[in-house]
Length: 204
Image (cartoon, rainbow, N blue to C red):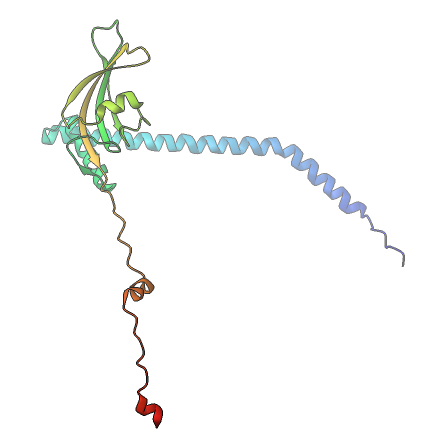
């Protein structure tokens, strides 16, 4: 049997060429429209976040004026709420793995005073993941409200002042004790032995 030749329809081929040419011409325009839309959405989101931030600052200022609170009071309240929502409880002294909120100031060997102050939240304190093992190692054992100065850096030429604001810890969840398997329990029982038939029974 002879193979049937595939028929080519000139009309369909021409339509495909027109479609490809149209897409090629509109491709740049479509990309520009998509980029413009993305930028517009980003600007709108940034504006919304800025409005939220302004309102939060206004609420903070009103609370400080009405109730005589300070920024430290508000920061402590926010930290308490965050810890409670994430399952942390307050503890006194820092252990490895705790969450520590602290203020840190640093200075170099040729500076007589500490430069500025930064408030930081350190999760898994003592592991070195946030501030390095030198500084985080010094946190271990410190208590809330305690201040400590340490030397750090390659040649110990830097000095840091650490002040612990808050120490929080997640309770350790102990795995429940495994129950003994029924087969193991059965194995501990004394095996039962069958009684041998009596001689009279055999005679009968």
